[in-house]
Image 1: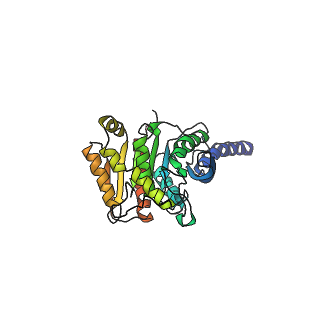
Image 2: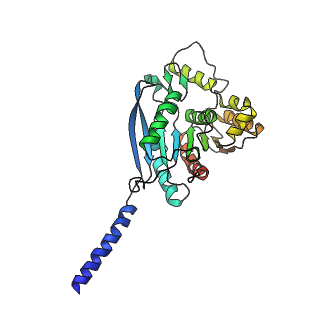
Image 3: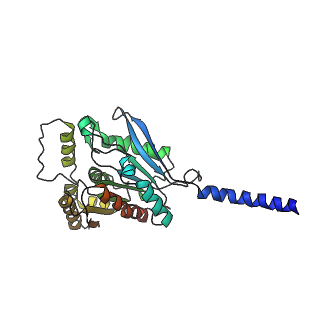
Length: 293
């Protein structure tokens, strides 16, 4: 009798072990780097892998490219925005699907002479790097589904403008955009000396050249149709110095009859606001992923 009891106990333990292991699986955040021939430099990135990533080796995932702001780096969305904690919570509650989130590094301390910006500029062809090297590398090195319907882009401030412009230029690549406190263009009270060659000036000039509002205002009907294939969301605080630029963008989208959700919440240009924005951003991206397409 004891022998049968012992065998039954072993069987139960063997059955329970995989389930326990699955319950113990955790999402993972890694910071790595790749060498860019375009930039002739190593570029870091930080990536979030969902908790099933290691256990389910055959599964592929939708992906969100999440862009940081000026002077920040790829890790700030985790250190200050607490992305891992938020996404773990929303995934557990079913409000967000399991996804890969990757944040490229397009910044650093300007005072320490670091480049900043998501666009091509003299000495810093970052947009070319992103689309010809970074995105293809990520989607081959990790198990990414790799379609428009399962790829989203979002960002804050400089990254909010970057994510908006990336989707405007590549509407065939992204299912949704979530722009937070976005640098859609420079405020008019901030004049730029076009003859200056410092990195901050080059960044400002690139923002002017990639004016997100002008892109909509100047779009022909064919381009408008392409922009309508993307789900747009603009989120900006009522005390944010970029609020008027975000209002101008949404007004341009309304005139062009391109659907765009717009939210103004209490807050300014800071991490408390952007952390809270994730609770809307991540479910928004999830709703517009079409996993089976």
